[in-house]
Image (cartoon, rainbow, N blue to C red):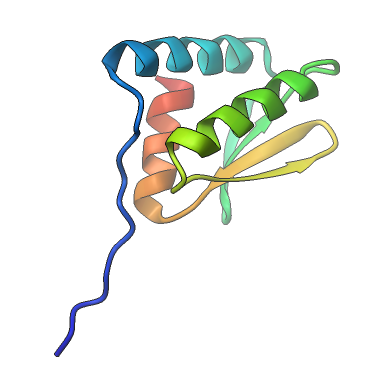
Length: 95
């Protein structure tokens, strides 16, 4: 019986790049209006004016960590993917 191929949960940034990116995300989250788990992933409510920064970081993150999905709505965004990806997003964004 063939095994189902699982998505790879690995970032293509080196250790220094990962630390820098995590610091950028955490600075954004520190300014946010909160975070909550939703059925589709981790939702961050951003302050007015931080939408562009959230989109910039999501674009960069999508390049090195394609296992994350990002969806945006007015005033916030959700990071989703597999359960392992959502766990990784919580570690990345919330520490």
